[in-house]
Image (cartoon, rainbow, N blue to C red; front, side, top):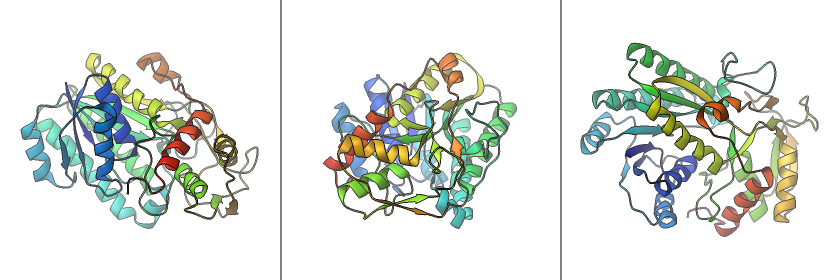
Length: 336
């Protein structure tokens, strides 16, 4: 069974590649390296001891996609590729809409033409907008507070319409909460270009001495310490959810959404303090204004994924911090 992994050189895509290969799948990866490095692909091969085809392809390039689908008989697609920084999406919304929506439409058109009807889509908890209560389950109303989240929500709606038009499709919408951590080997991890948009890589870069201090966006939320609360999930747990989704799609037609989270909310300062305890590194921080589009509290009810997919997160916050630090400490400059 050959699986196409879009955005395979990225943080989550590379970890998914390892998990797929170690579980007997054959894979083909593509990435345009807009926020990733070719070194991650090499390291996936080193960790697994397995080779696989990789193509430098942008999903906006319809001709390159068509050539790829002519080369291989894919069983399914796991679609990670997309721009993903909340703050940046507020600054350059048109780029986010064009890239994320058009790329996905091009991918689905190629899939339909070549009769590849199984898709696992990398969605986001941002599709819940400002939830009225927590934990968040899949029946909650959907909205978005920023262009990144809205691009994910629109894609979910496009995929719903696609299934209505042709109910031979099998689609899993995986709504991620906040992935952190790294592979236990320390050989692959989160490696953002430039200033990190996500919390954990910023913390690890402060710990390694690349940055002076962490900026904490807002300390006046209605939470136990005033900082935002999120559902942090280990990236390896997250990608195991994708394998469970693939197995589910083998046996079920339709389109279903699943939360991938732990069901536990930790604040920014909870994460900082746990990381300091695990790493032995003090993390200086300063409070700054809230970011546009951020919400106070967001954590999952993951019961649907456990009941239907047979999946649940297993790694705790200490393990997430330990693996993040092992990656950064062993790779002070990331993949460079």
